[in-house]
Image (cartoon, rainbow over all chains, first blue to last red; front, top):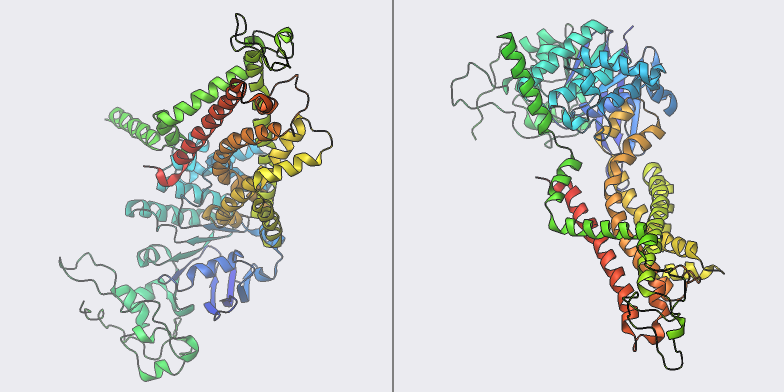
Length: 332
Length: 308
């Protein structure tokens, strides 16, 4: 049985006097123990909302969550606030995007690490401090004894993210959700943080849900990849399969838009036309159709169903034929 | 080679350490060079020093009517300046300089006391509203709105007048209650901002208990503006307490001098002996100015938007 089973997760934001907005629309995926699963998509595709829904961090009012999120057999969405609070940090850890704003600026790092240990493992402060030192050591923060007493602003960006990872992993959660953990860091630090996460996940056997818009991160880390568009999974496959042979035009476009090292100087990038705002509702067809180079008439009439194609889930009427080169250059 | 590397590492570590300056540190750096802040700080420093040392600084007992034989009520005569009494005496023949010096003590007590009580009240209400939100927030904020809609001095008078026997404590209380809504609204605002901040979300994601989130994560991050506000409130509290005493709602026991009360006592002889009113008035103005200068510069320095 999978460690985390997300089935048909739907989040609808409803405000008085406004059209309800389906941020996440029937997302399903599994995470096996020790596995790394990626949720990929551009801004506004519902990846962060998915993670917040799993963690139970969406506001009670205004957000309607349906579906099931089974963690080790229990449905997290049915737990009470208190039960969920006990699980957060202990069973489920989370690393956020911006390491500076995710740390409390007026509390020393040490206290922020021990806070979780005291809360979930009932450790006395002194013991927790020793454990905190080990944790900082493990995530590669040099001179942990000094750093424990320092405030977030005294740490560099990479060190802050390391500290956040240490905090998230302090209670050895079986599942870690990382919401764009490298977005706020520069490229060299990104690489360090990713290899650290890879290492820790392997050492501790933690399952990881990696949320990112960066396909480079996915390529380096994830076992299975879910590509989200407009709140639905449009393509799901194992990493190698997805990168070697993207079938959904959106995935294809995402991969084609990555700058290549072997491209000639001055060569233009190949973007996906339009923006996320150019959606049509899934109920009236395929949300990606207005931007899709492969769009047919049927795409704006019938909602594409999810099809299983030899271990790959695909939601498309007219998938890309394997072997098609990147879409031709878009005139600017 | 190894040695060279380690010394280089230390150098880099040192640089890294010095480069990160906290908000407080950078604020202090700027304040130190601000003449306005220094003026305020010097005034407040001298004021606090005088009020602490006044029992020893005062040449005479401020309650002793030692010059009473020079007071002639019928001819409206009061003791003039004379050797040993540089500012002369007051209407009861007491040494005026001593009363002025010792008066600073009461003024300080009233100002600090009223600010502290107002601050605590504001902290409680603001924390309740900001932390719980929902209907608690609405109820607390409506109460605050009602209190703010009344002119503050009028509200202070009404509260002070409710007590049958006015005393120093009733003055402090009256002035303090008026300050509560100011603090409450300010704190609630920054608490709400904290509530939606990333680090509070991160703490929630770690399963930290609600109480700990409020008191360890939200409250300490919201206190900056409140601290600045309290230096400004100190100034208004002193002025309002003086106003209450001036109108006779202050401490009726005039053996312990207080500037506002001294001002009130000489109302009748103001046109013939203006110096009796001028001295306490000047003292109040200078002290209030000192706190205001300090508070304003502190607010500017602590505002992250002004940070370079």
